[in-house]
Image (cartoon, rainbow, N blue to C red; front, side, top):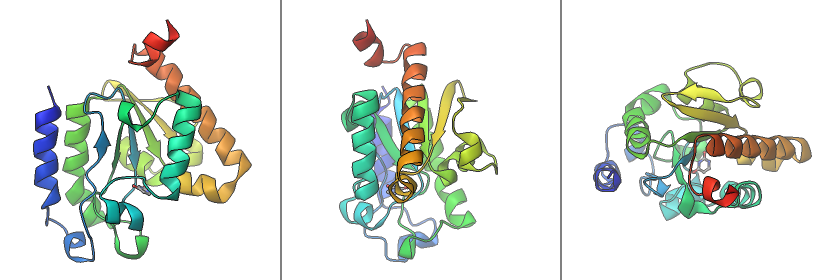
Length: 198
Ligand code: URA
């Protein structure tokens, strides 16, 4: 049962001072939220201002879009999945995380993946896709395919912030990526999709 272990990891992370982001205006560590037994996990880049304030990932405008597409294409809300970021603290001014920050934070994400053991992972944006898949390919090239990953499947898609900026076409592509993820979840026998499909 991973829940207690995940709680212990979260407790360790909230006091983390292993990288400079701990001293660069972070209000709180944004560890992750959701179901510790989730079959579906979303991975974003790093917390923004609103996430830093509330201590939860994807609670600003990007998060509202994520919630909407999740409901419309997968028929679920946040309680069914797990949501986390590659980097758990807000980089000042929303700059890209630096290599030292990424490397220092990486063990938290790796351990979350181990404990939650999702069947399908949707990466949101270039940064998360490149980090998880260990590639330098851009998200436009990576999306539209399913990538085997440690016994699970990664379905890369755009970052919701990019979809908010980009309009109709990226929105349609993001929806298609979510439909792909649902197919992968069904193929993997994931709950609740299999019981709903029955
Ligand atoms: N963007 C991200 O990548 N993560 C968040 O939690 C919020 C915005």
